[in-house]
Image 1: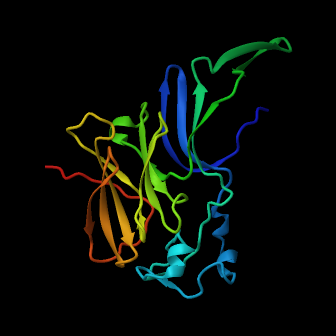
Image 2: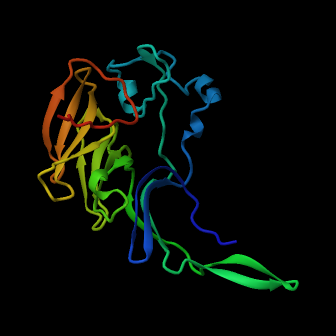
Image 3: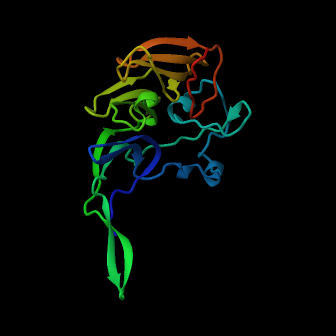
Length: 253
């Protein structure tokens, strides 16, 4: 039985075939880190903040120690529990599999009869670490690059910045990185919106709903897709509860 790397993943980034090989890109960890989110741990003293953390409140203990806040109650209060990436070895990895001669049908004589089977190709998948760190809730220009050879991925980087999260852009070919981070700000899932007049893959903008802990309100952040520099922020005048996934829907005539 062949063996290989053992890992855990929430999200795949992209997958495509080129020159007889299939490349699979995904955000990996050496073990799951949601094991802490058990009812037993939530009941333990110290596992959660005993005083409920009000959504939108600015608490120093909630901003530094509990960077990863998950809403577990439909009311305007929530439990705060810290998800730690410690010892999880987060990486963006690419596994490449040969498919041109991945296997061949075989027929062998068994007890005077014939038995069909599949001969496994000798060899292993190639592994390339694209980024040493976190790029969660990853997104690309799926309209133009889904299941195709691509260059850029955008995501949340929650392990690089002390006490807060940031946004990251990665060139998966050169491994060049760009970051956006602002003190007291917690961005949400980035959404890439293409510029329909641009032929460049990163021609467009990146949107993220960000909670400003200093002002107790949320805003829509707009970053330039190429330079990853801030273009605008539009404050909502209130907080927006944290969530996992979102989408951008264009208006249609």
